[in-house]
Image (cartoon, rainbow over all chains, first blue to last red; front, side, top):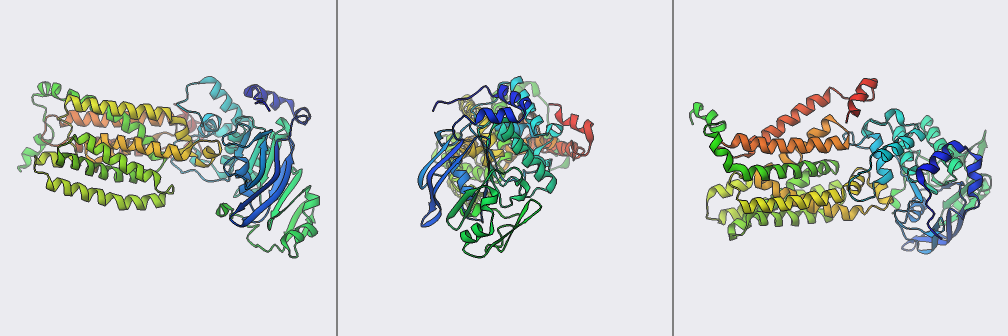
Length: 297
Length: 296
């Protein structure tokens, strides 16, 4: 497939005004944003998942859930081209995954910047735009304009010139979103972006991500241990546990039967006013805030 | 020493006009080193490598002392020592904690080696002392050219990797995800840092390198968060300290390093005072404070 890289600035500006429906309809004709074919990943003799066939359409919101060490973050690393699959293939926008692809936007877990970092909000967003290029930055106005545009989209214009070390976790995650959107990507990979944010910022950041996929038809892969903050946006769930996986709508996957089967023990899913509560998980730390699964690599 | 003699020993401007032409070489070398120190210092701060600079300096000192002992070019000796140290540190432990312990191991070893070589050396004792505390006033044209070439190489390489290095230093996780070769950049940067340290040693000596590589950048970061302004101020402070130090040291009988380190330190103190008045700028101070930060 040929590299179709549209005039970025124009597309985003247009998408920003076009609103929701038009953009989403236009992209459904394109190939799958993400495709995994018989993908498997194992470390030594420990199998995280295997024979994973998954196709994510443009504009689709996929939540990836599962206990620590089930390979959620590893899945993102595979899609980023940082971790080779043990078996099978992974395609992004029809091309094999590779590092540094412009088709991918990535929002990492919130990690505080050091207080003295000589970097303002706009500089951080600017690095997302062209930080991977060699040399020093020579272009002036067009670059500044684009950064301002991105800051505007995520509602961070008010603190554009404040050092990043002085921003709250929620404000920093908005900048992360702006960075991730800088190349107008076809796929947005989010690694627990809501972790350690308060409720207000959780809603704001997830609404932002939802808005992007509606406007520009960006496919979203959202790794999380807590589905409720994003439950209104999620199209499908990929649940990883015990070397198995299930894919389907939240109604199909997040049930007492399916989860009990995956965990091999009695797990109850309670639905209450559109929210899901999972009770009796064998790994008690799974749903606790502050945990992350960096240890599995 | 008679207390009345101390001041003229430190500050003495007699025959200044005649002395000045003698240090033209030193001034040129000093300006180049200020530029290198100021530029590389911003990355040293960003990557939290202050301790590594000290470690590299001690091995550089050992290299220079060895060169002195066997009668080789001292600059080459110190270049070799610091590049070896920098490469070892570049490959050792990405995490600051691992790195710091390896530096702690390497540093005294380098210093010990240096002292061994100096004890075996039977030439002028001023040469020995100079490696630790700085010399420069007697830089000949060949040495100046060598230092200028090295400075040019460091600056050119730094400019070439500027953006990805900033990205990888400030935001490593995202940089790697965007395909920035952070590991390779780290090794390249350490080599450049080794070169810069070896050059700085020629002026301020192994013990005081931090005054040229850390202090100016640290001072700049106290007063602004704009990356461009940090680099500009850092270079300005470093160059100002070296040139000011050379000019002040000219008439007195004291080595150049106390002057350089004192100027550098005073700039830092001034920047801290200015910076502390703006704590919370842009957040609590409202629009006025925010404008002050933006002015870049």
